[in-house]
Image (cartoon, rainbow, N blue to C red; front, side):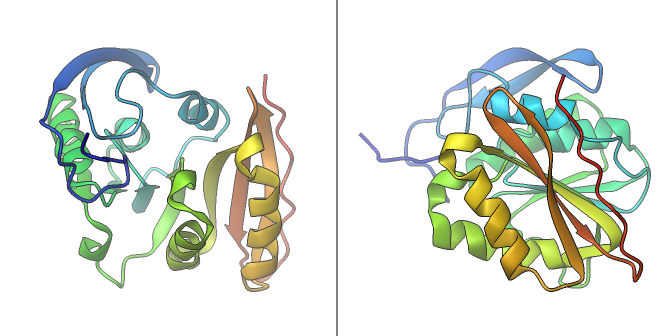
Length: 215
């Protein structure tokens, strides 16, 4: 046993890849996954809920997938917004290698799959879409969010999907309390036991966040 986790930096297990078919950006896609990364056998339910309950991403600018795994969220962003730059960020180097392979297979040359420290400090994001790694622990998760959410551009939204019984409601409260007053936080969708939370950087006027019900 290697003790690998999907949030391991360099999985020690022997690499074993496989091909799966998933629906992304309105079409079936044949993609590569591997052991030692998150949800290698299928498109996980949380990511499905996120992708089904977010508005179309901005057409341009820098878009962030935080905790990209083999890349389903980043690939969706890249396919939907080909003129944007998509940053697919993960600490797992095997996941990044697989995400790069998938980006190449779909001709998404606008995706940059990188380690967190490889994103330039001056990059600001037009949106963040994330199925964050809840199992890294509360302190690590909170550190991730306080690092990346403040890098949203004014008026931009971050969308985060979290399983209800893994602390979605407490995370919503923490985000509300932790983020400075220039952010709004709300639950905007529910489905299949998951919550989609949205953080919005205000632009000066308070813009209400509508609640979207999952189908």
